[in-house]
Image 1 (cartoon, rainbow, N blue to C red):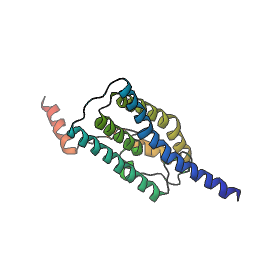
Image 2 (tube, rainbow, N blue to C red):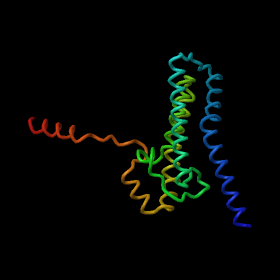
Image 3 (cartoon, rainbow, N blue to C red):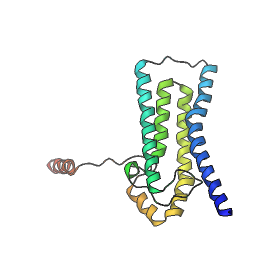
Length: 183
């Protein structure tokens, strides 16, 4: 009975973490900063194009987050600091970067900055980027390393943390080599 209670509490914590975290980052804090915009009279008009572009970013971030969530569910993995992953996610967007769920949040926030044309939400975006880097560096990656050990070390060697690697085709490399030889 104690084990069941413990598991239920952990799952409840995971749900709270999964809802409150993104809700705070993507709604509560931006609304606070938009309030600062109003108090400081930093209200700027938003064009239709801005609205459409920002909305597209927000939807792209939402789709990426859902895709990541589906992969984690299929892998019996987790996005919560309160639950334990059983398998390392390495497919889909997890092949490109190690933290695509963070990318999803960043993309949604970029959309909010564009849609609201808000200097203060822009400040929040950059503050959030710094907080996300600190969280990943000091908590999430050490936690994943302790869970998966050598598998996570191998994954870290082949998959960048934040920025996808741009692969240059062999054809392009050969033409660069020929150009260098001719020079």
